[in-house]
Image (cartoon, rainbow, N blue to C red):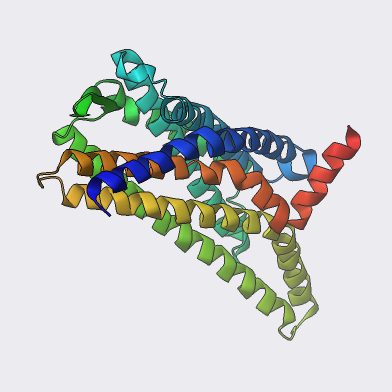
Length: 319
């Protein structure tokens, strides 16, 4: 296949994804995030500090859907892109997309840390999982990320990548290189942290189950053991939800990370117009795929968690 044919094929895939699949994702993602928020606000789950992180996570998700996915649908699916004619809209769009994606990742990390704390075998460690810690972590982390990503309100520009084709992006200068390296580092680090913390939570639960079936030496040991098991049983479902979210995030972020690594390696390579167009189309497809974990989170939660299904059924029964 020639480079021109490949360019046309990938551009067609990009257009059809954004024009036909995009609106479906937008619809189910909006409904899913709203149902997630409603469910985690229920009294049964709201008592758990981890619910605060999932509420923040789904709030960031729905904002990311409307500031990132909706833009892709309009600009790539229907060729209506105001960011290529307005520098203010260009910078605002990149800032909000970067911010809400980072916030979503950050809240998922906080939820992972909370699950490690609450599944610990040590009572003192479990007590560190509190609503106060959740509120402070969410507020301080949000403020930091809002300030940290403010550079996206200054440096992006409207760039001509090939004749008659303009995009809103960081220029290929020190700022563009910084964004690429930062994104690669962030995706790799956060993905590694999520996997490690998720596995640690599973390991903690297995240790608790092992200690539960071990021979009990005294009545006191039995009481302590039952308390540990009670904590594990109550929080296991939230661990399952977290593992599901991490798995989806890992799958699609890994694809984007590979693309960024390739782009950084080939920065100094002289490229034809067709190759530049193909790389831009692949970038847009990767950005589109990043929205999928946000859009399917509720449906994944509903499938893997019995307690989550029960809460959702209660919500519909009340109405």
